[in-house]
Image (tube, rainbow, N blue to C red):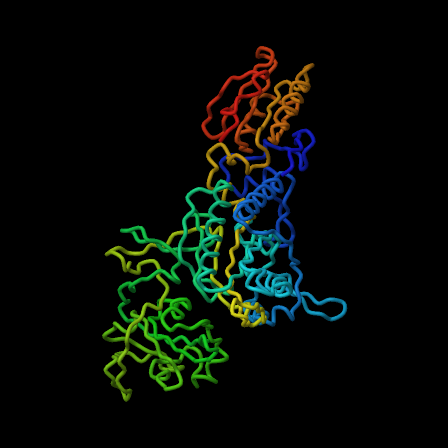
Length: 553
C-alpha cells in the first residue's frame, strides 16, 4: 500500500463536499465522494483514486492473511481457453446458466473471461506436481473475475466484473484436504477481520456450480446483502436454506405435490435419473439430495430433457409417473406427510383428492419422507420448537471442499508413498474484495458519513489545514506529513482555501480514522486529533510526534 500523500487541492476527481449528503446510503456516498464511478455497462464500475486505495489495502490484507499461514501467491490469467473448461464440463454448465462471458480470437479460438479459477490453477499444478512430497500445495491469487449476471445490482455487491481473492489447496487425501479447509477458514477469518468487517459468522452452505461437496459461507447480516439466509427465531441457528435442516411449514389449504427431475452422478460415475416429490410451494435443494443419496453430483433436468427420461412434459410429472425401477423416487417430508393433496392432471389442470393409499385408478405408494426442500421463511427448526425467518446477508467469503471433482477429470496425478499413481484432493476459498469494500462502508457508516477502520480507508490520517493561505501553515502541514509518513502512515491533506466548518464536515463524511487539525489560532505546534470513531478530541504538540494512542484504532 502506497503512503504517498494525497492533497485535496490536487485529487481527481475534484472534491465537491457540498454535493454530498451525509445521510445517503453507503453506496451513494462512495459515488458522491469519488471512490467509485459508474460506467455505461451495467454492473461494471471504475475504481477512482480514493476507492483504489481501499481496494489495494484490502487486497494486501487478504494476501498477508494467507501468506502468513503458508500460502504462496501467484498470478493466473483471466482469459482462458474453452478447451481447459471442457475438461471439467463446466463450459456448457456455465453457458447454460447464462453466466459465462465468451470471446473468440482472430484465429477462431474460443475463450472465456473466467468467473472463477479452479481450472487454470489446477492446470498450473498439473504441470509441476510429481510426488506426494510436493503436497500440500496452497496457492493464493487475487484477480478480476467476470460473470454475466442477469440482473447486476447493488453497486459492488453483484457486478459483472469484480475482484476475488482466491486460494486453492491440493492434498494427498481426504483427511489432509480437511486440514486445508481449516486453513482456508482461518485465513478467511483473519482477512475479513483485518478488513474491518465485524459480525462475520460462518454457516454451512450449498457449493452451487463450484462444488458438489460441503462448503462454508462467511456472512454478514445487512440490508444491502444479495443473499438470503434463514435463522431460527428461538435458538438462533442460521445458515443457507439449501443446507439448513428444517421441517416444512404447515401446508396451504389445498396442497399440490410437484415432481422435480434430476440426474445423479454416483461416486462410481454411474448416472441415475431421480425424481423428488415436493409440495409445490417449496424448492428442492440439490445439496440435500446429494446428502441423502451419497451422489457426488446432482444436476437439475432441463424442461426439454424431461420427455426423453420420464415421457412427460415439464409441469405434468406425478409421483406415479416416476415410480419405475430405473428411477430413484424420493419424497420430501412436505409431500410424504400429506393426508390429501392434488397432483398434475396434464394440460387440463389438477387432480384433487389424492392420497398415498391409492385411488382414482392409481396404485398405492409408500412414501418415506426426507428433508430435501430448502429451509425457508416459516419452516420449522429441527433443533427446537422455533420457526425460521428469512434475513438478508452479504456473503463475503466462501470455502469449498472440492475433493477430486476437478483433479480427476483434468487427469492430475502424483506418485504416493507406495509408488502408486494417486489423485490430489482439492479445496478452495474466495473472498469478494470489491464486495468487502462496500460491505465495510455499509456496516460502519453513521449519520455523519463513512467510517473506515484503521488500515482500510483511503488514508490513515486526514490533516485539516485551517487558513491554508496564511504564511507557514502549509510548511507546518508538510512537516507533519513527513513525520507521519516516516512512521508508515498515509495522509490525506485538506489544503483548500475553505472555511473550517466545511473542511471539518468533509473530514467526517469521508470518514478516515483520525483527523489532525492545524489552526493558526492555536499556540505554535499545538494540534487537535479527532477520532472519527469516538468523536473524542485530544490536544497534542508537534514535538510529541503525536502519541500512539491518538492515531491507533
